Amino acid sequence: MPNAFAHLVLYSWPLIAFFLFRFLPLRAALIWTIVAGYLLLPTRAGFDLPAFPTVDKDFVAVVSALLMCAVFGRKAQTQNRLVQREGRSQQRLLQPDLAEINSLIFVPKRGNKIFWGLIGLATLSPVMTVLQNAEPAIRGPGFIPGLRPYDAFSIALTLLVTILPFLLGRRYLASESAQKLLLKGIALALLIYSFLALYEVRMSPQLNTMFYGFFPHSWAQHVRGDGYRPLVFLPHGLILSIFLGMGAASAFAYWRCQADKLKAAKWLLVGLWIFGTLVLSKSLGALVLTILFCPVILFLGVRSQTIIAALFAGVVLTYPMLRSADLIPVEAIHNAAQSIDEGRAQSLKYRLDNEDRLIEKAQQKPLAGWGGWGRSRVYDESGWDITTTDGYWVIVIGAAGWLGYLAHFGLLCIPLVLLGIKGRKLDLTIATSSLGIVHCIAIIDLLPNASVSPVLWLIAGSVMGRFQTANTRADLLAAKEEPLTSSDTPRERQSRPDTPTAPELHVRVPR
Image 1 (cartoon, rainbow, N blue to C red):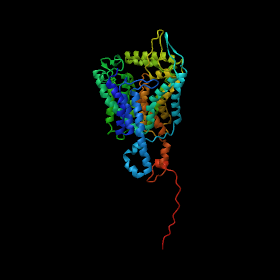
Image 2: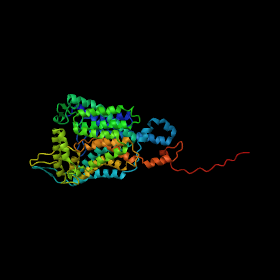
Image 3: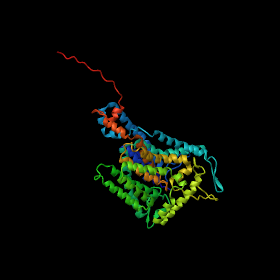
C-alpha cells in the first residue's frame, strides 16, 4: 500500500503544476506537467469514486494540465486581443511574449470531419457496449453482473480523461516550434530519469519502495540473469524500457532539428547515453524497436519518415484483423525470438496463446465488446481466470469491440496515416516527421504491452494538430509570389478586411 508520502506527492501535483505554468511558457509547462507527472507520481496512490474515473497519477497530472491551460491560456488570449487593439506600440511592449501568444492560435484547415468522427465514435461506443451487455456473463459456477446504464456514463467519462492529453496536444502543441519543444522535453526528462534507472540496474528496483512504500509489480519479472530490470516509479520495467527508447529517439530527432549540427552534437551524446541505459535495462522488444527506428530518424528525410510511420501505423490500426486472418507471421517471430533467447521465446509463446483465447472470446461480441469487470476474460469451469492480458490492443477490443478499438487506435494511428497520405502537399519539417517516428515506436509497443500513457496521447494530439494546421506548399509559393508592403505580414494581410481606395486629392497650388 502507498505510504503517506505517496499521497502527499500525488495531491500536491496541482500546486506544482501551478508553479510550472507560472514561471514557464504555457507549452513548456504543459509538457512538463504531463511528462514529469507520469514519470514521478506513484502508481497505486489515489481513490475511486462511483461512476467516476479513478483519481490516480494519470488523472491528477492530466486534469491539472487542463485547468492550468484554461487559466493561463485565457491570459495569453487577453494579451493577444490587447496587441490587436492597441497596435504596434503595445506589440513592442509585449515583444518577448509574442511568439508564445502566436503559437496558441489554433485554426484547423483540414481533417475536422475525421477528428470529430473519431470523438463521436468514442462517445457512442460506451453506450453500445452497455446496451449489448445487460445480461450476466458466466464465470464457472457463478456469473458477473450485466452492465447498467450508469456504466455507460462511467466508461465515457473515463475515456474522456484518457484522451484529454490528445486534445491538449492538438490544441497547444500543433506548431513546429511546439513539437521541437516536445522532443526536447522528452529527451531531457529521460536523460534525468536514466540516472535513477542506472541506480536500479546496479542496486535492484527499490526506489518505489524506498519513497512510496510499495513495489508496483512482480519482483520476479524484474530479475534478469545476474542483473535487474529497472522500473523506478513506473508500473513495470517494460514501460520504462519503451520510454527510454522514446527518449533516445527524441534526442536524435531534436539534433536533426538543429541548423548547426556540430554545435548541437551534445544531443547525439544524450541519445547515446539514454540508449546505453536501455541496453542495460534488459528489454529485448524496446531495444529492437529503438535500433530499428533510430536510423530512420538520423538518416532519412521528411517524406520517407512520414511514409514509414504511416505504414506501421496502418498495420497497428488493422492488427486485430490481420491477426485473426493469420496474416501476422507469429511463428516466424517466435522462431526468431527462440534463436536469441529461449526464455524470451517461451514468454512470447505464452502471450500469443493468451491472445488466441482472448480473440476467440472477443469474436463472440465483435461490435461493442464485453465491457469491464473482467467480462472479456476467459474462465475455466471452476471460475478461475486462465488468461493474461498483456497487449493494450487485446484489452481494448475485448472490452469495447471494434467500435472502441477504432476510437482508441484511430486517434492514436490515423494522424500518422494522414501525414503519410497528405505529406507531399504539406509544408512539413523534420520536427514533425521525426516526432511521428517517436510516436510510431510507442504505438507498436501497444501490441505486446499495455504501455499506453498520457505522454503517448499528448504526442498523438500534437501530430494530429500539426496535420490540421500545417500550410500547404501551394500556399507558401503563392505567399512568396505576392508582394508585401514593409508593414505587412502574411497573417496581417489575410486577416485585414478590404478597405475602399481613398479618392485622389486635388491640391490647388498658389501662384
